[in-house]
Length: 299
Image (cartoon, rainbow, N blue to C red):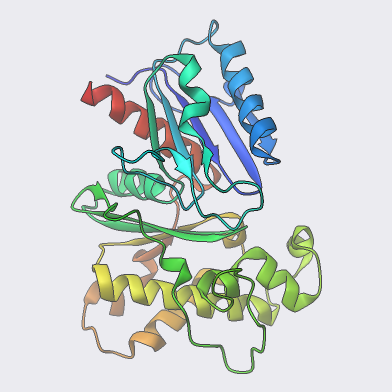
């Protein structure tokens, strides 16, 4: 039986916080969207909103789906922290600790592992990858129904990649320059056009830059396929709302695989293998609700 829970979707540009209804689903009347500024102000604003709404809708757990890298090892002194993120001012920030004062259990996951879990459950898949494309690029993995943690969690977007023919962009990852994230995140696309990322919505769908971006995301998809053999790849995030982007990605994936894999789900039905999120913009916050439900069920 679902419970009323709170969810926090921590993004590099913006954060969403919400309290579910009695069925564990999103309710627009109990949600808040804020800009991600510095850790002190951002986390305090979320905390104070939750505290102010608690008497109206008493939640019994909090789920946090957070940008990373993060520490998911519960035996680590930095469990619940954002660690070596390239986002200025957010290195080694204790996210989970900021909400302990609310005295409810807190579930913590990456902002891509949590959606991968929700998407796999919605589709009945035992394994799935969830890729997000926006301020950054990330990939979450669920294998045999469980999120991949290991030493930490997947950071596949930092794989070095092959350049698109004629693309001389240097890359925008402070650690690796021309990794997949550095070549395909919002700023990388905007830099090629010599505009600010907040103006990308004005760029037409048929601009060649989207095909270039898709080539790098396709390399991530191909790597995921080779390494994990997931049942499905779901792609979400702010930069996926382009007509034609999925077609470009699927085309490049097939070219990269070059008929090496004779798997009908890919060769004959790739439109149902590489797909957009079932929940669209709500996937992040709903996945935060879902991991909160999970921590209740374990108690």
